[in-house]
Image (cartoon, rainbow over all chains, first blue to last red; front, top):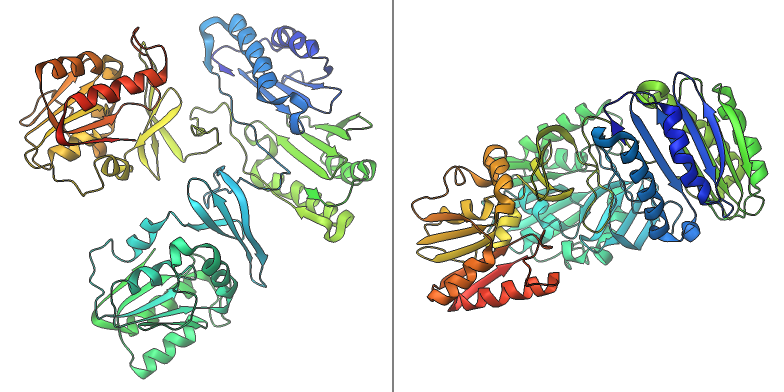
Length: 307
Length: 307
């Protein structure tokens, strides 16, 4: 609850404490004088509530329980309804915001919380852990979501879901490119999505260079991300493609030296490389090196796509 | 922290309490005997921590502070690093999962938490409240997200973002329909997205029926969702379209009686209607009525699209 008035913390505490005590909860109060109150209410079954009253107009209620100690949503909702009613009685029209957030579930078999790269909390509708393995380089998870299908998560970072065809299409040029008869080089792309989509378009030859860091990613994806990669990862060689399990930098250098040229280079390496070879001393150096080498293997009228 | 062993709650408490006490936090412990411990650590600046130790192998740490009472992330991270280190020392290889979740921000000017219709917690990268008005029917918010552009939120329910062209394209038949010279009826669609996209395709006539419930939605969208609706809501009439601000049921009945027929009916009414007219006693009745009436105004080879 946030409100416009400076709060009489004591009045709020006195008004709300009967609601918790009616539940048979035992109260402990800490009074900061200048920072308001923290009241903790403990129930016999192991659940508890925190009531934090800030003097500048913010009241926070947190409920924590194990399994159905709170007998589920209904009991929680009833308690919160009473608190809300009482607060509205106390503050009349001066409450700026009342907000209830869904419960956060911790300690379960399935972890539904996968924060974004920019640190936002996102809960997915995960209902199954499909694959969960540690490679020497990273943790590789494939989790099933009702909404997105199987989702590839590398060391906690959501990478790609089976529903993310739009990502693959975008990095291929959003349907505006003609790959027929073309020479294509894919850097990274261990989930097989780009390879699978390009092979459908009758290219001359697609070479995908995935480092050995990606070997277990490939293993997981070829089994459990088949909406993304189809059967293209079942073999490392097909009629018009090959997959090299090698670090891409020596491969690019070799191709540059040999004068091997491509119509398209698609850089699908993870945005921040997991490890860089000794000659690069920073991420930016690594990215610049990849870009420089890619330009050397690109035909005059070739195209380079990346994230 | 979850782990495989049954926990010696007292040993965990004894191991972790110095970490909190070092921070100048005052401890209060509740011992349930059969349900483990709750230790509350209170700091002079108004921040506090809850340490909940469950005997079956789950330890939960919650930190709560106001603004920079915890001097930001770094201090929090240091504290949590110490807790994690100590837990790993205690349990060696037996910790199943260690997970830190991003801080939840409450009481700020901008509310970043908009749970999904299926009750999942999702934090958006909202950086501006663009529009926030109460109509007699609902609260209408338009919030700006760096990732999605402006987002329309109706009574807490995320409706459509400027980035959601894919939604509009899907409900129009995913680019497989030819709207040239066609008669189209849109039910709902107050954000103007469908109308804007169809008008581009040179239809004979598009009629959009948005109830007066949507008037303020239209007002907000025509100002702040222009990537979605362009200029199509600036006037209620154009060369090949009209917008009727009326309840769609009487309009459908009138058209049915008059024998007015359409090539396409696109039902973009909110999935759960805000209010139903007196003759419907349930959501399903309402949905069935809309569908029945739509069929009556649809040409023999006409098409009906909905969510």
